[in-house]
Image (cartoon, rainbow, N blue to C red; front, side, top):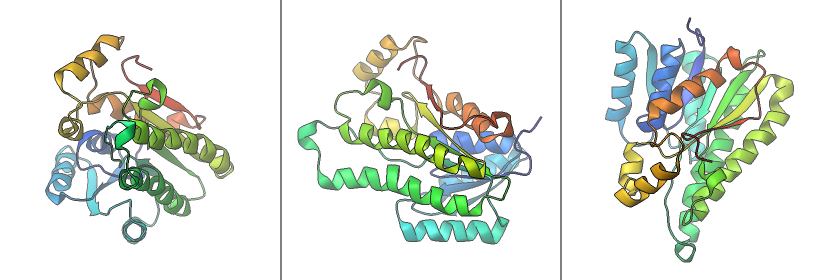
Length: 249
């Protein structure tokens, strides 16, 4: 059974990694998916092509969701093409590691402008587009908020804000039948994680050694939970934070 049939879903930052897996999963469950990207149209088009080849519906829209004007243009395009929105997955994010001594104002704003402010502004726009029956918002946070690794002060702070926003907006938007939940992945193999150096042997081995299930994750480990929370099957679930990290908290 396709639990998201006739739903319109936006997944921010979905041209690769966890976002792409979420887009494919939502489409497989029947949703029409807007694949949002910032830089690589080729990667976004590839995700769309995969979805269409599998019998789903999707199209790509370029927008930097750390930029208020781009967000406005993104949602204007969605209104023009679909008229409304049913599901928002706030997946777009940026991260970097570094010691406390290396934290800079520029890096703080780079992460918070996307991970926190961009998420809030996308949510503002989505709420205005949900129909009277409500909608579902799934924020992609991180398990760093529970196991707080060293040298991640700014990133962990930004994702801690996402967890707090999730609970706060669940209270605020509940009367409108808009559910807000968070999925917090552990270490997942993605292009961005490769580029960051997170998968260097010592770090990966350390994480695997303290993870009850003994391995790091894949994007497909995350996507089904997002699809469930987005669906009506989760109709009485809001304000929750689901850590998906092989048992590592």
